[in-house]
Length: 91
Image 1: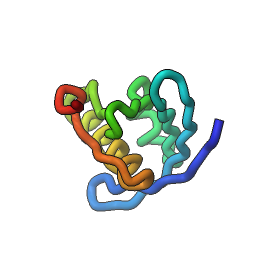
Image 2 (image 1 turned 120 degrees about the vertical axis):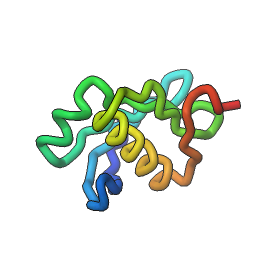
Image 3 (image 1 turned 45 degrees about the horizontal axis):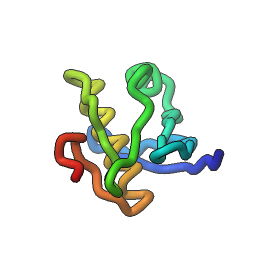
Image 4 (image 1 turned 120 degrees about the horizontal axis):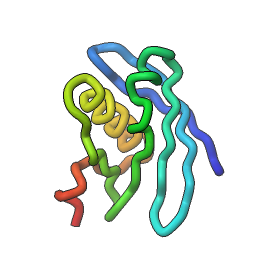
């Protein structure tokens, strides 16, 4: 499983995360944020998938965890030059 380092912006600050890529029927991205409090906040919402060439950010939890998940999803999409969208918008 390849592991890459990405950066993402959350609340006007730049953070870093490690992403393990698992290939099954689709790509899975397992994220570990290199910041203890943010890693704890993302706990249980750290797996992203790729469908139709886009990083799917669903399900999006409420409030701060949801904002963090969307920020990380955008960071993954930017790093891999992919689109980022909610699942219902993937064709």
